[in-house]
Length: 193
Image 1 (cartoon, rainbow, N blue to C red):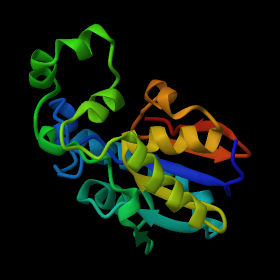
Image 2: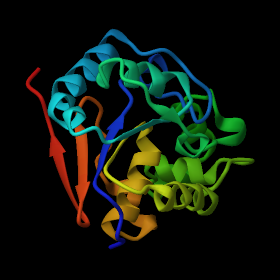
Image 3: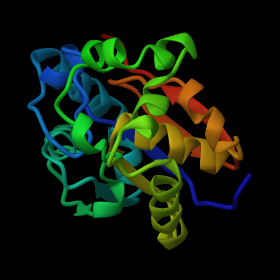
Image 4: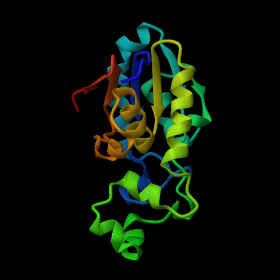
């Protein structure tokens, strides 16, 4: 467990490509109606948090910014490229089904989405991804709200909780909730539908 400040982590709402099981990486697709509803659920959870004026950060990618605009009630936030999703090389924009059809070894091994991104030819890779997440976390100097991406959230949450990074892909990866990270523990905050 590392000594990081209190963090509220929000994964962006569902996108068109999430719905199609298409690897987005650092490409983008818009939020669906469900994704907008996800962000509105997060907004209901953030009222009390925002009253304490934590630092607000978001990935510069459109889906995270669209979510942040809703979930953070229009408050100003800073974008940081270190919060972008893992780059999936030439697999960005391809469907998971097409990739797995070409790579039966990933199916046989029970690969998680994080494992699939790790295997992407020309991709960023987990070591570099983890290093940029740690760089961002080390710069935090107080309670912070982060609006970013699913796989980034898994690796970030594993880092903060002291979970080995190879196990990060087994962590939940939900939209429409808020992950509260404090003192090496995680609490999932949920608003009613």
